[in-house]
Length: 262
Image: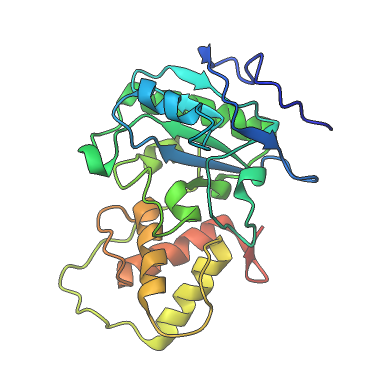
């Protein structure tokens, strides 16, 4: 199918309240269709500022949808087109995440500007839109991701305040209750076998990580990305027993076959 690069003329979802076409689009690479849904926050003070940035050719960024704090959904790029929201990223062996995904920008000023809670009305809109997208494109729960999952260290959004457990209860994304944090646990008590197991689990789930070596700064960055999504109570990047147990149970919930999630 040939993708038209004419700005979007009609919404892909009945939930869309407004269209604000972005010129920052291109066709998905041949053979690609949406198989990942990526959640972002805008990191800008207002939705008007976010939409301006996402529609300016000189900024070279875009997304498929923006969701305002009041729950209003704005579509900027047709789902059939490749938006520029993921940047340098990786998931499960895939490096062209823009061709493989749909991106939702959620209005929140982010960590640099106070990082307020995501309002309930906004989260309800996120849930409704995500359910619609994942249903139409048959995107499985374990491929509903944070920007921080696909770009550890480079990105931290939508962050530890984003209500992933509530979303999972609404049928969006995969979640297991995190194992309790033991504040008395001595640092570096996990063995080299535990570290190797954590590397295997992180790789199997989709994160980009070297499968060999000790617990280094690169692994700490990936562990923190995992914690931002799946163990938000403590996001220090340390591989403690809570993180390892939560990771193990998450991979079990997703289903593993030959070291990969299917």
